[in-house]
Length: 131
Figure 1 (cartoon, rainbow, N blue to C red):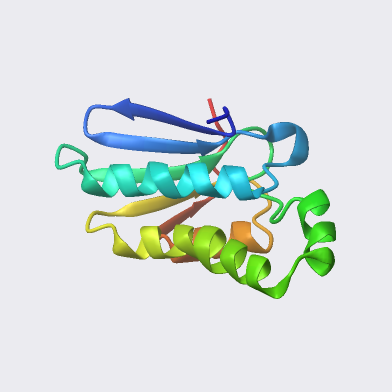
Figure 2: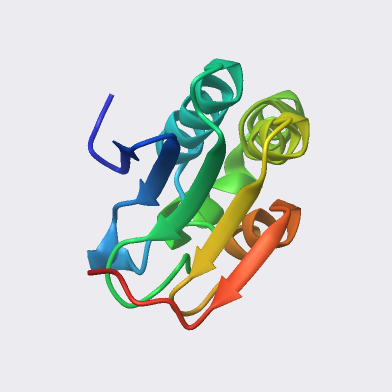
């Protein structure tokens, strides 16, 4: 695991922060895997009553990392399917599967898969700035 996704808890609220501010929280396969795990853990924890997803720095998420997106044309079709459905869509499935409120605290640009994450949340709060 890296620090590309941070998890914090205050009372019964779990906050999950995309933490690649230098790239406007561009999403890699690794960061999406970490995000999926964090969301699944929050959903499975009976002491968590709500989940907030946000981004560090000035953006929620700029979407897929450009270096990763440039690799896609060179990947075998089975690998593309594995990445898209096994990683990126796993986040959306995790968001939709949580039986407690999920709030996307959108603190800046939410592009591509970043927009998909925000839209998959139950609520969106726009213009939120991290402390």
